[in-house]
Amino acid sequence: MGEAKTRAPGDGKRPDHPVPYAVYVKVWLLLLVLTATTVGVRFLDMHKFAVFAAMMIAAVKSTLVVLYFMHLRYEKKATIPIMMAAVLVIYGVFVSLTFTDYLSR
Amino acid sequence: MTGGLMSGIETGKPERGPDEREHGASGHGHHGDADVSKLGMWLFLFSEILLFGTLFLVFAVYLHMYPIDFRDASAELSIPIGAMNTLVLLTSSLTMALAIAALAGRRKKLCMLLLAVTVLLAFTFLTIKGFEWDAKFHHGIYPKSPDQVNWPPGRVVFFGLYFLMTGLHGLHVVIGAGVILAALLLVRAGGDRDRTAFVSNTGLYWHLVDVVWIFLFPLFYLTH
Image 1 (cartoon, rainbow over the protein chains, first blue to last red):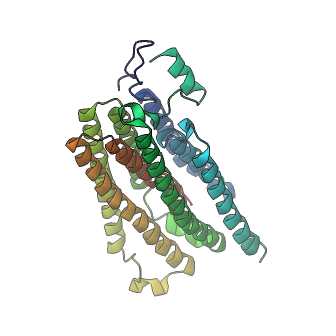
Image 2 (image 1 turned 90 degrees about the vertical axis):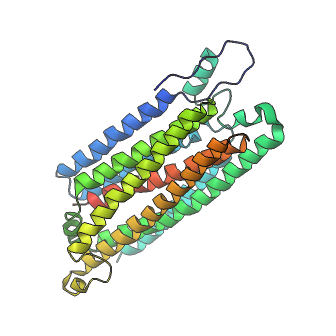
Image 3 (image 1 turned 180 degrees about the vertical axis):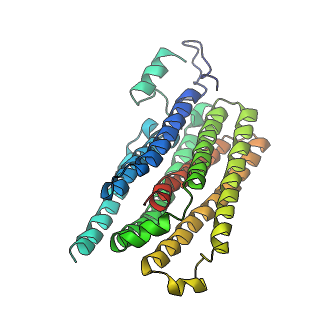
């Protein structure tokens, strides 16, 4: 994939795109490495921690997708990141309340 | 690539964000529209996160209740097939992101090509999934299968959730493929800057479909 097109300094034109293609390719490669890792981890005898480890890796992968592919890292305004944080907190409440119930039975 | 832009990317604060290109020629009103449509898309995606999130929570509770049944049932799913579909979907996310970058760079042909590849990868995913489901059907594994009376309870739940969640995800892939195809036709028709907003929002949706699969794959295929 080609690099971002250059623009002459001070010509007042917008950059062709804010994120170079190479960034996406690197993120994709990292996602592939993490996929291989999650498959590899499954073959280690981790028992109860296996699911936890798999979820941690999946969380890292999702964070990469959201930050780079979905451009959250390049948001100028805080609106969407704050809403995202709120959604995650709400989901955290769902999960903790549910398991407070099931784990205490 | 100027030093200023490069350093902006490194610090996470580009001097011009991806959405700001909107108002180059068409003024601030247009920019606002793009911002609002993006916000609307994200609101929809948040509802999707909670929809799939709730199903993941159901899965987690039953995994906790029937760890042995879940482990045995998970062993019947093929890791190579699941991993291959992960590869396909991750790659389709890459081509989608590149398509948006190409459109921002006014490289329309490249953008259309990348969107076409994304659609193709979506159908590849569905084809693999179809063969996988078909093999399960032939082994008497499907919702309400008569064999289920002899199954341990955890196995019934595991495959019930498997078909529900991969089915709902597959439906999202079908819809995504359709919307990406629409984006491709809009880009080809050309003209308005609104295309950028439409293609960007399509990308957001497609990446979320990818994120859902990122969690589906280890939970169903690797829990043993």
